Length: 359
Image (cartoon, rainbow, N blue to C red; front, side):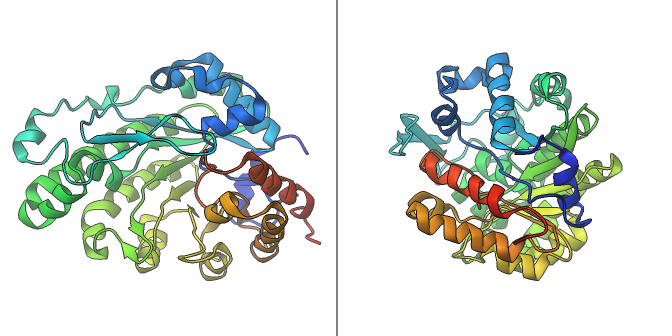
């Protein structure tokens, strides 16, 4: 494996031709997987303190370096406490004991009164950015940071309001909805502005899931009204600093892809699922306008026998890599229910068959 060189990934993000090999791109790898591969006790570090832990951040650097990435992915959470979080036993292969998810039927903010009483942070205190400073000082030569705020514009609004109260408010309390998007959007924008100015930032990104398998969570018209204007402002922050902007978003976004490309102005899209649109179809449809990242279906990564998985990964490389504008990785993340051997098999196939000129 060659030494890291962020220019390799940058060439892909800007669609400026074929690099020496197909770079790897991952939104993130779960800590349990990192621990299983490296043997380093990363999960023993308090989850609430990991982004303030030098040991944790050093392990991240070593892991992504040794796996062959040209960057370290990092997102920082906003300081937005929520009470609508549910927990259950984590039954993944590499269990973290408990898994959390959003309570759909109730929210932390359901009314204008809740909004006014909520402990909103000041923009300059909305996120702890020390972790970016540490990475910038300790990254190996050739590596950069691909980062941003953990969670996107739509996600944070829904997380705070809960799905059912949010959907109800769209029609019954549009003033509250507008206030929520404006407050969340302004907080994320303020943090992105600071991140974009920091050392060793190679690209800005946002994770903002906007759909399910059949379509978008809310209508394209509502996304255009509430979400896209704030996403566009964040993209403009990146572009003013000469940074590409990556959008990670799950779901069937076919109805809004033109908006994301032509209005929001994203440079690259991540998160693909074969049941919605295989990544090689996305490359064919959108690869002349944006970079396409990842796309090795998570269900296949989790369940295919290794031999079949390797054949499938080679198919993805063969269809997506020609002409550049593509980086190899999962369709979502390397979750703790994906066997580490399958993850490593994907990377090995990338090393074997992702060199240009392609064989």
